Length: 64
Image (cartoon, rainbow, N blue to C red):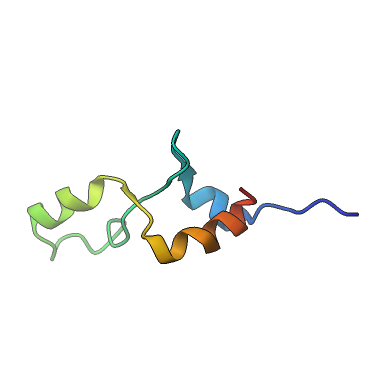
């Protein structure tokens, strides 16, 4: 049987925490920042966790 490969796009975008949750970065923080408020940009800096319905799909992509 061939090995199951990890999805390359997913491994660049998501990290597993020590407790098995999936960490992600916020979108909309890479360009066109002049029209966004300082508060909005500051809140986009912090990482957050993936929401429940998406966890199963991302774990399949990461082969976890």
